Amino acid sequence: MCGMGFGGFEIDGKQLLENFEQVKEAVYQTNFPVVTACGGYRGSIGDFDDTKRKQAINDICAILDKLSSIARYYIDRGKFPNVSIFADFNT
Picture 1 (cartoon, rainbow, N blue to C red):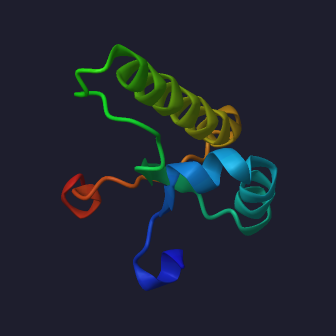
Picture 2: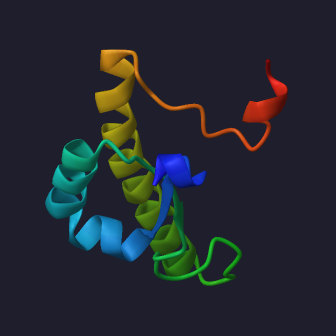
Picture 3: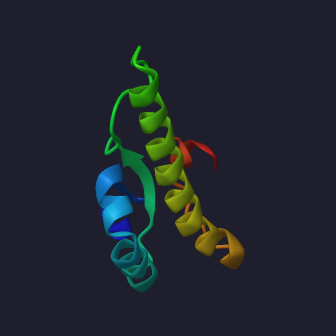
């Protein structure tokens, strides 16, 4: 995928949480990182209902925790890919 111009994969946050071990194993085997997550959390951070807002915040924190766990694998090995949209302009 990297050879086709893709630097990483965006995953649904719910899928990341529910299938974390499978996602992590796929990332490690393919060396194609999950770099972002989109949605997948319950509630809304802008909800006026305190319970729903806290639920959304807790889910988002859990999603970010899983993403950071995957990122740590690359950081520890010094091979986290440059996924910046401006990567071509940094040279």
